[in-house]
Image (cartoon, rainbow, N blue to C red; front, side, top):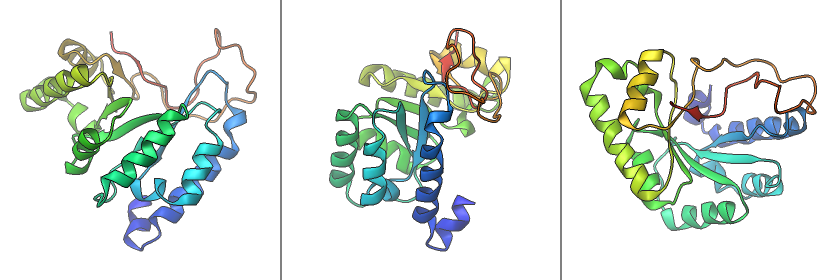
Length: 204
């Protein structure tokens, strides 16, 4: 859907619409659960979108920067992301390893976390090339202080391989599947379960 919207020139409009829908339901979730919001650089730099994110900085949200289009001015983007981080909004680089843009994001920005794309995670235990690239990303993440999160982990074998490579955090269907929001935001965080896509878990 987002790809089709971008192809017709309406990608940012759809991102803003989705963002407003998510923010309307912030109060419906247990307060201990963070919310990661996917935004393209183009959308984040739209003043209405940026202001909307900043207005909700105290609601436990984070921004996961995607790579829908090439960035032409990283100075402007870096200024915007630095303002988000200064306000306490965590910045993650999404889809790392899926294309050139995500690697540029990592080098040009200062992310709080790096999310390894599912294309590198799927069947990684059978693919030495994926293992080599992931090991290199682990080294980079360790040296820069940004935790590496593996996305799309679906099997115990993938999880075990990632752990052996030094990936400390993972998320995916192995840990939980999407589901409706809970009926109340006042559940006890010690007993309630996250009904939707789980936050990153310790890989071990």
